Image (cartoon, rainbow, N blue to C red; front, side, top):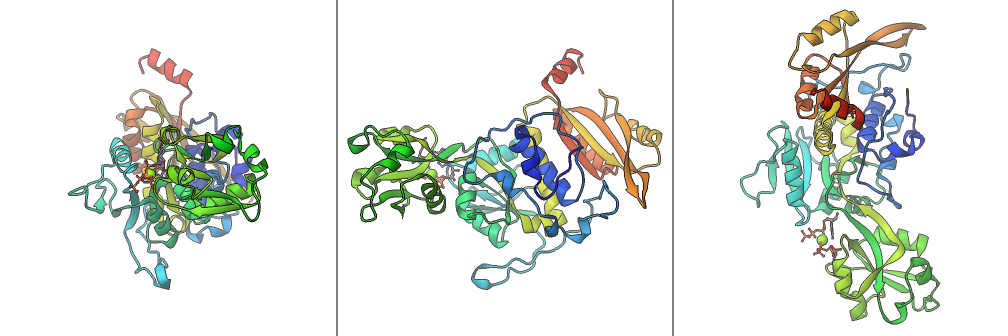
Length: 433
Ligand SMILES: Nc1ncnc2c1ncn2[C@@H]1O[C@H](COP(=O)(O)OP(=O)(O)OP(=O)(O)O)[C@@H](O)[C@H]1O
Ligand SMILES: O=P(O)(O)OC[C@H]1O[C@H](OP(=O)(O)OP(=O)(O)O)[C@H](O)[C@@H]1O
Ligand SMILES: [Mg+2]
């Protein structure tokens, strides 16, 4: 077994540190003071190193933040605590200018209206069978009929991050770059899924290819150039003031001036308003077209679209947790390109036989796999007692969601999903299962 404490994520094996599924499972488990089954595989992720801010660091959930209603009984460990089924609670969010947002009951999801993000966000949700409904692309308030009590707000990514921080939104999708820049290390922002598979780009330092920079190819060489003085600092044009300052402090020459700029930055060195730029790059065409080059060691951040939430909302509202879990499970089921998934569910009952019978009475759930059912023990009053039963099954990916729903309807308090090893999938496929 693997248990998380306050320093949890840093203790995980390296191959799992960036795993969104693993992390969220543990975030949810950790918030409920549960122990998780051992991770038996590496979950692939498109995310690469994120030198300045690591989403995984933001997933740490101090136990002191846990609401008493879900924190469980510390004397019974490990213990399964049911986390679904109650009516939505309310949260009072502080508003701008010190005003209080009125108590609200709906769950709010912010989706990016940015030209680069909007279409891919909508098609990802559609592929996860969470289509967004709105009368026209100009309608900025919408719904996802599959998720009752949820309101969708289309906003610019920066606004999404600000509104998550202020409590006006509960969940959102934005580029990790925007979350890091606008969030500025705000611990209330928590990355729920760090690799949604689009919006891939990097924030990097670029300099002119010619002139005094002709032989400069790395940040180190740039920092060692003799012309940067207190009177004439290196001028960096960027739309990322917070990340830019941090990166230059750690990597650049000491005399640096960060110039906040908007729009196409690539012309700044040619005009003479800046010496270098720190900007988002994906294929690098615009840099090349403007006679600029990236520097070795000049990547401040790797980014792609992420699912982000307000820690406060997740902690305070069970309905926000349930909806977040539902969105996450659908995202994972869609994003993991595997044909079979392993599903582990926990259920109360009187015996292994009784649970097995209950499961087998639902043939639609498990046409192809026999369930493994075992007892889960916990310590109570110094004695080991059976707390509940764990059911382990394999389901075809396309039946994943309906199977999970069925398990929940049968009274499963917790359902864990993990991909099977490719060899196991191949074997199942060869067996025609
Ligand atoms: N060149 C790029 N390639 C891939 N993704 C990018 C690129 N530039 C930006 N992104 C991602 O798209 C997000 C939105 O970008 P941005 O805020 O520039 O909006 P936009 O769609 O370009 O413009 P607009 O404000 O006109 O809607 C960024 O936060 C980043 O995550
Ligand atoms: O590496 P490339 O694929 O060439 O892309 C890089 C460009 O993409 C972004 O601008 P965007 O097109 O989003 O325009 P914007 O400045 O209006 O946001 C970024 O600011 C760069 O200018
Ligand atoms: Mg842009």
